Image (cartoon, rainbow, N blue to C red):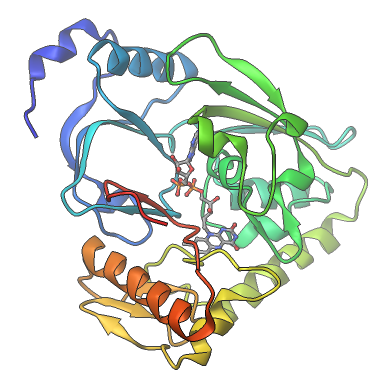
Length: 307
Ligand SMILES: Cc1cc2nc3c(=O)[nH]c(=O)nc-3n(C[C@H](O)[C@H](O)[C@H](O)COP(=O)(O)OP(=O)(O)OC[C@H]3O[C@@H](n4cnc5c(N)ncnc54)[C@H](O)[C@@H]3O)c2cc1C
């Protein structure tokens, strides 16, 4: 990557840093360096950075908590924007209205909502992503999903024009899908309408039970990205993979979890290339034996387009 530090002169305020390893920004703990990386802490900084990337004719992309990302070992050109500093939320226990910045961890919001007696996000406690990532991915678990409770999002287009609001009904939500994935809109904040007046102790208990259930049935102690493949409904990707006896199958440091077959864990020193090879291997095996093409839920960045 050819770095030209002079191009920073036209950017007021926050400055991106060059050649920052992105492995620290993903839950798989793999990925090469970002040509440029910045973590804006407010909307003004975010807008300035997007406009700067546009002026430099640079690619610009968003990283939330990196819990659904596979980043190439060679790294990523252009500007990567990490949203984790854009945190904070406000909750109204009477009306159930909740507003959160995109970088707010979704488990933090779920716990705060439960403590305020607001029902709706108890399923979200075990999902280690941000509010923005949840809105983009329509994250969900245990029968609940983001689209069920989201009212609207505040977004910016990558052309850097002024922010605008999109209501939930405009986001084309479906299973792990939203319009935000296709149009590359940047989520700045999200509004939720939760159900007020619930028992706080009971909500916190359900939230804890949900987390306990997940940590006892999924390999939470290993670096992973959660479920690698979307479920080919009504079938379960994990079951199809397990039926092939692939639990524990490894390529280098990448391993199909022995606990949950739809998880690929970094069992030590894995590279993004090894994880990607294992994804392709599973796809081919499942296609050959079951005649089903599995589609990754995980977003692969820096790789050649594939299914
Ligand atoms: C242990 C574990 C368990 C998991 N369990 C679940 C589960 O039960 N259910 C589930 O749905 N997922 C699960 N996941 C996957 C992941 O946590 C979710 O997909 C989550 O919503 C991703 O959020 P993120 O902030 O990490 O997004 P990232 O992984 O950083 O990004 C995902 C996509 O969203 C985009 N994006 C992120 N933030 C923004 C933003 N503010 N504006 C625009 N685009 C943005 C990125 O560009 C990328 O395309 C799990 C992951 C792990 C590691």
